Image (cartoon, rainbow, N blue to C red; front, side):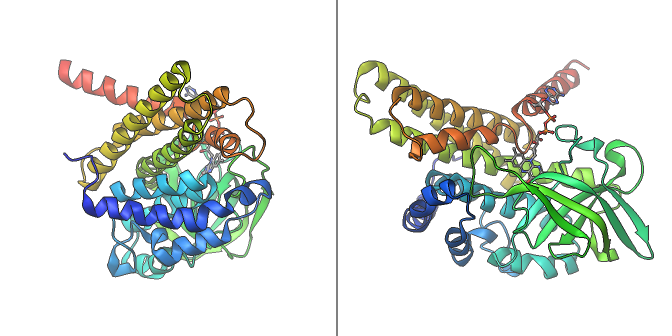
Length: 374
Ligand SMILES: Cc1cc2nc3c(=O)[nH]c(=O)nc-3n(C[C@H](O)[C@H](O)[C@H](O)COP(=O)(O)OP(=O)(O)OC[C@H]3O[C@@H](n4cnc5c(N)ncnc54)[C@H](O)[C@@H]3O)c2cc1C
């Protein structure tokens, strides 16, 4: 297994880095302070093919793999973590379910415009009473004729109000996970509206809010995957989504570390040892994330490794941002460091909180132990 980047991947990284430095980074402070959507960056990402990085060329995508994806999201997040999460959610949890579970017609209808970034995607699983315990969701989908009617409320939805397509999870019957189905809901579907948009402490350029489904009538072609198998759609999407979030965390940690290396105290032994520890954790995180991506790209089991990467990289981002801030008490509001610190927090929460990642890892470890001893 090769986890160092070969020539082609290094060139890809340099290419994304140049785009991020030229287009994304100059907007980042303004995007953050004015809580505005990074229009220029997302348009540019679409033009470069980054929105469809994981989509095969036959659907107009770049056909790159998850190893490139994690590199891409890291580079974007180094420049602007808001831009990175918008691209990440779009390209992974909103687009990949269609690749994995969509019919030929659903793929033809949605993937080319998602890949070009003309349609932005969103993933709507969380509800007011069901976050970590996603199987407790209450949004209902009832049959009407040969189609469906959806009613319910989703919260904390990234890309809300901007998305032209929402992957929505709703209960079609049954209890817990067994009764959940996935649906493709166009952003302009009558009966669906944006509720409260949250004023977060970080990731201010990435809209996060409520999605209210009052009586959303959909055709039969809206069902994604089999009826009652939506929970598997969500979990599969989140497995590879966590690789992208690891990349986002690495980018925040790298930006904070770079800011730390510029500090006047950086060369003093106490500070330099702390920076050395941070750099070591950053590199270890890269290896975890690339390992998970490598397994995913080969069709090997990677759920545990993706959770390990997400847990380690997001804790590293928070710790590095906080650690460098401790060396730079003069860091002002609006500085890169202050933004990294505020942006890092949400990563420990979304796509499964880090407590949930520990549960995923522990369950697999214990399952393996019982298989060995059984
Ligand atoms: C910025 C942001 C963007 C988001 N984007 C999206 C999105 O695009 N789509 C989407 O569907 N959701 C999204 N979310 C929602 C996110 O996935 C949930 O917030 C997360 O899953 C936690 O759910 P919760 O907030 O309901 O907290 P809860 O599930 O109520 O958890 C509260 C606390 O209890 C802990 N906890 C819960 N259960 C256990 C347990 N069994 N054992 C130990 N500890 C536990 C959690 O770790 C957490 O610390 C986003 C959230 C944020 C903050």
